[in-house]
Amino acid sequence: MSDLIVGISDIKVSNNPADVIITYALGSCIAIIVYDPLVKVGGLLHYMLPESALDQNKAGVNPEMFADTGIPILFKTCYKLGAEKKRMIVKAAGGASILDDTNFFRIGQKNIMAMRKIFWKNNVLIDKEDTGLNYNRTVRLEISTGKVFVRSSGGEMKEL
Image (cartoon, rainbow, N blue to C red):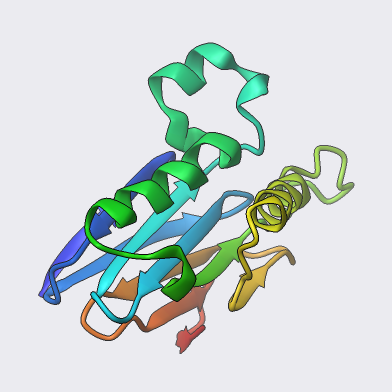
């Protein structure tokens, strides 16, 4: 097995059954996980912020930083490997309120709302999600099976 690590504002897509795609320490960031079971193509996006309008320069250099530019790239990259939208299983994790006890910035909530808005506009349903609350998460996607596992801070890996 080969681990593909997804950093912050990063994306990895694979059709190699030996690959496992992993992202660590999701706080207010969101991981979007997509998988087409027929062709065994999967991908994971780890985005930081809801909208590229917040910083057009950064969006131009690293579109994976934002929900509105990163999510379309995730889907299009999977399509290039043979995935089809109608078959894709979509899962999400993250969007926590970390170090924001007063909920002043609400970045986690804004990230969740941006994701839902984009999916709603594009007729995409989220099959399962583990979002919100106030703890970090680690997410892994097994390309061979399409199984997604989430570990909450200090907890054990559980299938999503």
